[in-house]
Amino acid sequence: MPPLKHDKTPQQALSALMRLCSRAEKCSEDASRLLVRWGIAPADRQEILRRLVADRFIDDRRYAESFVREKRRLSNWGIHKIRTALAAKRLPPETIAEVLAPIDSEEERSRLEEQLRRKNRTVRASSPFDRKAKLMRYGISLGYEYEQVTDTVNLLMKDYDE
Image (cartoon, rainbow, N blue to C red; front, side):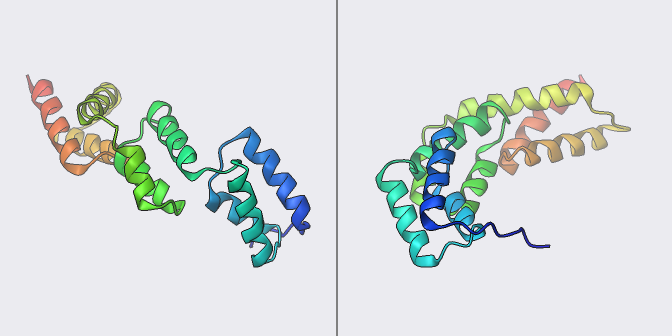
């Protein structure tokens, strides 16, 4: 069942989005989806989005930076998962590349290793192969690159075997 439309006037929609954007970062795509759901005409949608961007209620780069900080710090996501999520928000590839560029690959590797060590302590496995497979799935589900997960899991398995 599709979500119910809440018909709003363009002025009501603008006011509602200004309130929402002042409380939490929103990207253009989030605002656009809300406008569609509220039944706003395409021409009015463009004007509302233009106004929100001009008044700095919406800034896709600021949103992307905030998103990266939150997902790395609170959710422990890897770069791959963050990049995919930002692309799903239809942010420009240049913006995504710019906000991900400062991330240190060595720091990323150590974050992954810490996550996998923590998971390794709680995982129940019937064999080393099963343990390795579970750790691999977990690392990949966090959004880290396959090669990086493989190298880290192999290192942990070497420690585990000893």
